[in-house]
Image (cartoon, rainbow, N blue to C red; front, side, top):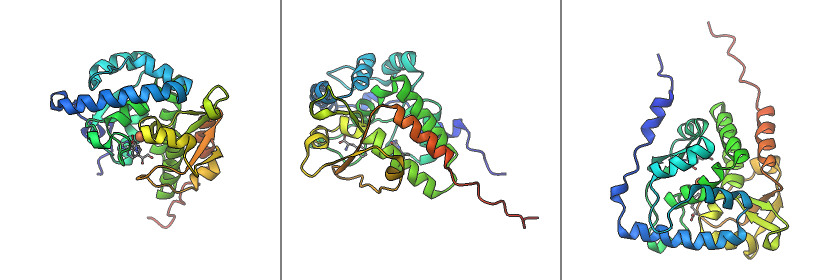
Length: 261
Ligand SMILES: C[C@H](O)[C@H](O)[C@H]1CNc2nc(N)[nH]c(=O)c2N1
Ligand SMILES: N[C@@H](Cc1ccccc1)C(=O)O
Ligand SMILES: [Fe+2]
């Protein structure tokens, strides 16, 4: 009898934050990136991101302690962060998000990687993603997105979902007349990278396209370089509509094999 994947099995991918393992260099990396990105995002970050950052009350001078962070985050949003080694299996990822648990990589980039890193580290996952979880609309969208992910039936559906996540949660921009250039940052991959924050808004040859679910789910992307195409939403409601339209347009269930005995 095949073991059903229960939440307890998934939690093997997560563990206690090994706080004692951080060295002075790690705390310096956090302090430098935190100061730099708070300054840049004060100007270019969307309102909800800055409001979320304020709720979290993250330390400026040292790597945040997940237990202390969770006391503020859980009270505000029902979300909590859990420590992981890095990218985890999609089904485990979806299962955690569906339980309002956000996986945060426990290690930090090196000092020579401050501006941009090709894979998510603690600064990206925590500073980039977690502030918006404190926004009710965005936090609910992430959970509904994950629930759809748990129902995905085939690789094509998973690819479409990964693309939706990539061009919104990771690299999304929002139209905002009050912001310089009429654009505000909400994507975590932009918010956690000093280089990409500026590049996404004014980079040479960068394309800003209107958000369109059908276009996004059929657009391939590179994970290891600055993006050249960003999609712009008017509000987080567009993300909700996207998940609901993907749910509504799901492939019909594969025909049950009628020949089976
Ligand atoms: C679903 C999403 O698009 C992507 O494939 C997942 C895979 N696993 C992950 N694992 C971690 N830790 N963080 C992530 O953002 C993701 N993204
Ligand atoms: N490029 C991001 C990290 C990241 C890597 C891969 C995917 C998403 C985000 C940064 O430097 O902060
Ligand atoms: Fe991310």
